Image 1 (tube, rainbow, N blue to C red):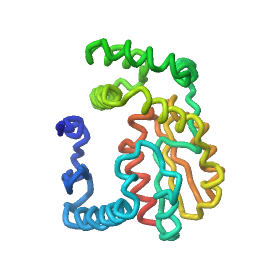
Image 2: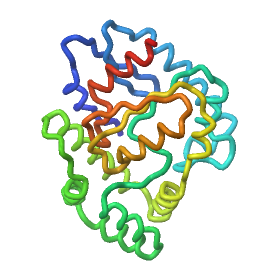
Image 3: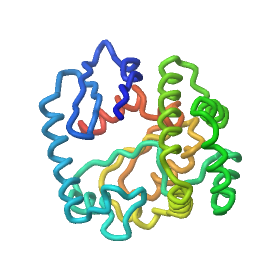
Length: 246
């Protein structure tokens, strides 16, 4: 079911023109100095065609919650487009949250019985109660009204996703997320890369962004005051604009 992304209204700028680009499941909100709708639609169609072509060859890619064990999509794009510039936002070579309660929960839910029991218990609670608990665990430091609204919207989406996933599928995702280590792949990437890391990001701490920079051969790191959900802010947008223009 489609839900209007009301938080987008909070990021309208006087000096930038905002416009939406919607093509099938792709729903983008773009801010630029001029209306680039036609160009954006053209690029969206171009890259959707690549993804749809990949899905024709590997149908499992469309429904899998986990990377497939063959011909990973992102490394394939990088290999085919070595001159393309890469932008990595709020990420790292592996998952290592800087928050004790996250790490405790991750260790606990790796045990099948614990996860199944917790899954059944949490799904007894109404969505509003889960959202309240989620906000306590995922406290944020930003006090601006725009950040708060965006944080609340993201929290609501996370809760909805959790309610749709079975305990078994959740365990697969957790196992993958906590065991994956992309250091070897990252060390082979030669594309010029811009990394955006959040000073207050506890899910993907700044130390992981710095590690990412060390692994990527041609990369630069921009540190914003954001947290995981808002690392890509106006400051980051200006840096990206400059990076793409170079």
